Length: 90
Image 1: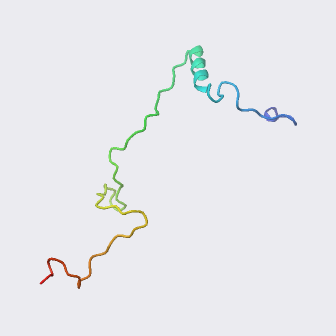
Image 2: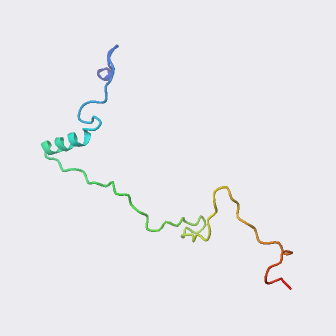
């Protein structure tokens, strides 16, 4: 265990070697080629979900979004019964 502890006055330096900053990709490719190792598959493509709708907390089915509200805004309630509209207008 003590072989991994640096003596007093020494500092661990992590920014050099095969995994150094901008040369990392080229160094790893060279090492893989020299060792005759296959490159890992490129899985950096983001996977789009097939169904973006959130699941229902009760049944687990997909919910249908009817309306979304702006941030900080509350949904309106139904109109008052005393308010007139074209149906209640005499």
